[in-house]
Amino acid sequence: MATPVPVQPTAAERTLSDLFETRADGFTEAPLDATRRVAFARFAETGLPHRRVEAYRYTDLKARLRTLPPAAGVMSEADIETALAANPPLTAGAARIVLANGRLVAEHSTAPGGVALTSILEPDDDSADIGALVAAHDDALTLANISLFEGGAVLRIDGIAGAPVEIVHIMSPATLTMGRLAVFLADGAQANVVERFIGGEDGVGNHLAEITLGAGASLEWARIVEGASDGTTLFSTHHLRIAENTRLDHTTLSTGKGLNRNQIFAHVHGDEADTNFRAATVAVGKRHADNTLVMRHNSLDCQSSEVFRTAVGSGGTAIIQGRIIVDPGAQKTDAKMMSNALYLDDDGEVVNKPELEIFADDVQCGHGATSGDLDEEPVFYLRARGIPLAAARRMLVEAFLVEGLDKVSDEALAEKLADVLRAALGEALGVTAEAA
Image 1: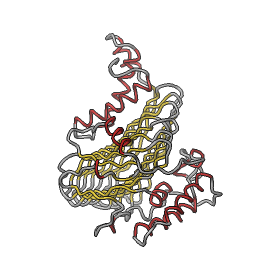
Image 2 (image 1 turned 120 degrees about the vertical axis):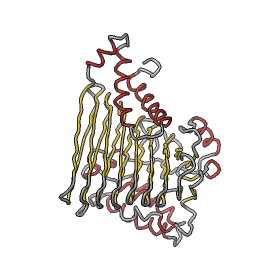
Image 3 (image 1 turned 135 degrees about the horizontal axis):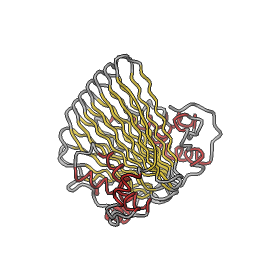
Image 4 (image 1 turned 30 degrees about the horizontal axis):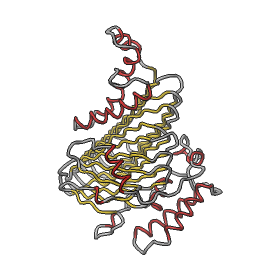
């Protein structure tokens, strides 16, 4: 997606170059390290993306990241325990996998039955498939992560996961962190995963996950991205490869502070796959939330749906970029995208950028967008029943956002995710759920 443009390195780009040179001294002949060299050479051709790069037109990273904090080191045991104690699991009985400053923390991680967990830096007989999904990609954040990731985890799910899996990324304040996940679901495998990002005040995080679904696999994935401070910059990129007869339900919650870009690059390459993406975003104050999704179909009889729900106000900015590509031969594709935005006041901004590229003739594809203020009729209805104005408005905004969680099958988890949205709204509107 990036357009090659000659650049004069900025201070931030020089920091990345110096960091790569330092790490390259320890590279081996392993395929993963060879991939790092190639990826950084490609990243250096263009540097950080800016507004003249179409995919980053509304999220200018060169302007945002004029300098970079130092690379994060190994997190202390005390800091890990403090962060985990303050953030208990969202799902009862979930197996936790912990990455601290991008590195897998084995002593705090468990894998349920049906799931094999290893460090991404410990190659085994199956390591050749790690990185295969992202090696040829041209996205700048992806290339930077491939070049510079500190560590990460590999999950191989061969059957039905014996318990929900919660992946926790913990980040130190004012540091640069790059973590990596590789998740492989075998044919017929099933799993329920929650991914969370904790900490990182005034820091920069660039996290990458490559997720491969085998034939007939089923995956529910919930991603919670909460910026810790106005100075936090957090990127989360998912690359997905989806085989035939699979079902994927993917939900992203974007709340908190700072700049956040959630990317998904999904490629359906098997017939009769069913994929659903949902995103609920609260963007207030200095929050800049970017949800970018590229959905490619190249198989028969597949369907995909994408629904973005956004509440924005008090100077917040939300970007929704959705691109659907239907390759030649992908007949009977049914692909839909919808963006619904709710303005909390007159000071928010929402940018919708849908794109359709259709090269097959027997398909149903479409996109739509709505935006507006809160409907005063239901507000009046609630006030007539003794509910204060602020509480009534909060209840209706909450109902609007929570509707985006409709694909979360675990009711207890759905309620926890709703709590995340309630907390964000409470801060944004100044009315807590209890007061409402």
